[in-house]
Length: 355
Image (cartoon, helix red, strand yellow):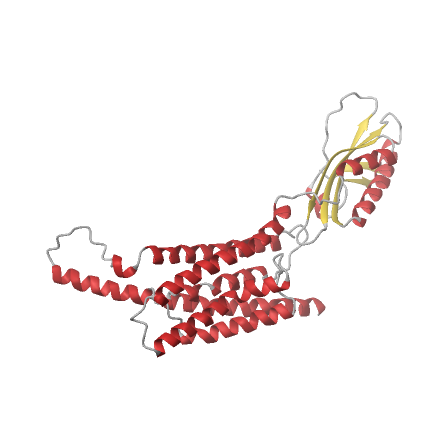
């Protein structure tokens, strides 16, 4: 019951944002206005980041993948709208005409003129920069939902402090209200056709918002970098750890250790290879080796868990002192990783492997 309640508590923000994405996508496709497209970037970022699923052990990278997808989609929408805005500013519609004529001579001048007029009319509608009044309720709902999620601490911080989070999520809605107010004032004064202010203001504001938003999302990518590249935690000293193992246990050497951080906190996982010297000429060497491996494993796991390790995999290699340069015989199997233990076990009081 508690698990179900937790799942529901984590799902409702995602469902709200999903409905908001659908509404904003509908208006973006309907009006083709830059400032009606931009709110979709932040809403999609939050929706993908908040998608909740029950991941199993060994699949904890899924939330990190979601965060990457959300940030990439955020940047993609910014790029599309910024490039669109630059095109509007560098290639004015009224001068280009978009007639796509490849010849100065036209054998059907009337048809060409009518077609050009029709295209120009459609282009002027397509690039309309007046925010429609019907879009305002969607923006108001956008602001309310994001404010509620911000105040309830349900939104990822994206490595930003609270004021910058407010700017990131509410910058576009504020700009939409401002542009609507400007358009309404000029429409009231019947000055829309006399001045190109709105047609210039829309792409200018869009470019400015895209630049600001792109800069603000950089810390989120920087936050994910250590997890994407499986970096070793800064507080973990590998050389000191291997020296401690060799000092604490005689004839034991840590030959390889891979420690990598687990999203989204400072916890980590570790994969450790150790060489344990044994005398295989003794009659009960396997029992002694198993007992020694158990002591070493408990010590390493205890030290790692105290440091924040979520999973520790230890791969032992038992080396016969009487053999020079023994061949490597790995005993790592899938069962080892699933059960979060070393790869050797006791069967009928004999040391065996799970390979």
